[in-house]
Length: 321
Ligand code: SF4
Image: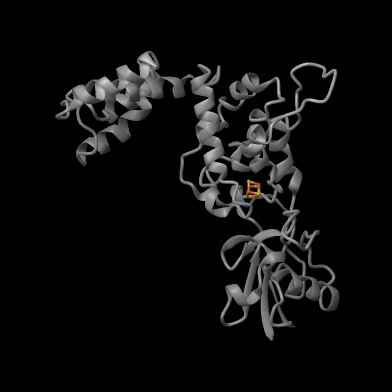
């Protein structure tokens, strides 16, 4: 079959005019060919300057992650036929990632610097005098995260990294989970504290895009939630320099406990902190807009829901436990 590839290029590269943003190639491929087959053929036969990463050709190494027809995917396991009826394939680098050349990313800046921050190595509880044997089920959660091939596609889908490049992102946090959940690790609490600092687990906005993007079905968003739950169970509501999260949690629980539903105005004020005048003033324009549109009730005029006492009892039961 005849396939047209439109590949995003770095400035002054490729077969287009100098500085072309896109190079177009016509390639003859077998019916079952993948996108990576096409790119390799282009590089071998038409344009040796085309830069992209690939290695295992089995969907295992994650090296060939790129945006193909507007979606983050692994090129080596993606048949051209499955994504394009008219045999047109558009290839771009992963979004929000620093590009080294064409669709080849600068992995140090995109990925590894964040990975290093989560200390991706085991800190054994003690110097083992013998092998640390575990039952299969003890490692079940950790094993799921061990399937991660560092492709970075979850970061590609992440809606926080788009606005905050310092957010660790689902890929690095999944790596953090891999070690925080390992029963042999002795630094679990330390890890949870560290991952609760700004840029860590509490900065995730639960959009669940990461789950949809992960080719290994690891569900990175769920792993982030697991670490949050684990942190709370261990009394870590937020990191040392991240007190807003703890205040947010407390305020959320207090208003639901008292009235049966969330008082959003109170939540915003209490999360910011009564003593934080500067932070409160910053909220003012948003608060006025929200009030005008009936989106935020006046603070503390928050009527109880019918049956609120049942909700309060649920809280009491949970606390008894
Ligand atoms: S969690 Fe999934 S999407 Fe994210 S880097 Fe690992 S394998 Fe790729």
